[in-house]
Image (tube, rainbow, N blue to C red):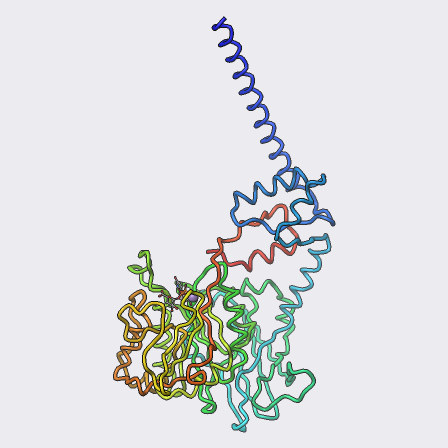
Length: 470
Ligand code: UGA
Ligand code: MN
């Protein structure tokens, strides 16, 4: 009897195993057939493609699940998730071609120098800093402009493969709603496009068509601002630079030193900087190898020291400020900091439980510092919380930022000695306002690879080239 029961149990176990194997095998075959079918199929005009999950594993499961339910009512169950639905139609491919052509055909930039006091400001395009090697592959475009308070003349020279076209335009537009442009406001200079640029229109990311870059020639008033922004390659990079760049666009007489922790420049970063239209230099400063392998890295230090070197070599007047690419800035802060005589400081809103990092002001004087972590620092301040005069820096030839995690700000400020607390100017209404925030963007994994077969001939092929993958 016992033996019989055992035999029966074994038989049952074997058949369960067999059925399971058949089920798994059928499922796999179904998945393969489905994948093949989808990659060869035209995109259905009513097809709804959801943004995919972050991990490629979960996304492939998601798409498989979606496939199983796409014809049934279960498909709607996915709709209450917080993903954004995107509709793709067959018209997309032809539309994308048109819009890309338009991008190449309209070269837009804006001038950052038309101060009211100067009757004539000459802008020349002779960057003292050389661009990194890989830009030589791309078409070289330089722009020179002469600006007066009443007229604007732009000369754009485009050179490629021994062909030269020159175009001149004097269009001036303003973004204010129907009001007259104020004399000290930015004018937006619309560069006339050469037929060459229009015909060779391609994805800007390929770097074949370079928009004219604004050259920066500082004017004495208001004092020039040098904004040193460390950046590095990651999926959020272009979003951060876009936000910061359009903030800086509100500020006149400003040079944006965008310094990447990398060995080569990125055409995508060039494209974004050109599109924003703030005068900039895009420089490289890779983190030294001995720090890169560490668990806690001194982030942005080589970049900032590169910025200091640029200022020592090129600037004589004005003020500089370390503006990390991921923080948030009120434009009025820039207008205050540009009059700094030595060093100025102000509160920085934090996204930590301390809430703020700030100088403590008692009876109108600097009386210490409030910060979540003091750590034996003489200046327990945030990187976004101070600015320094160029002249003051030039008088301190040894000032530098140390590669010591957590002590970057303190080390740099100490290296500016002699600096007395009485010399530190307290901005933001004697440090009673928060005009900048140390924000942090959630880190995202790189986007999954686009299925080139499935989406061949659509706009997604072009868009895919615009994504930064780390
Ligand atoms: C904080 C400070 O505010 C930074 O000034 C300081 O450099 C950093 O800590 C540190 O002590 O290491 P946090 O927001 O934590 O900043 O750091 P990130 O925003 O990741 O990096 C600061 C800057 O360096 C950013 O502009 C970022 O683009 C750049 N960075 C970051 C690099 O250039 N390379 C990297 O590998 C990481
Ligand atoms: Mn940050």
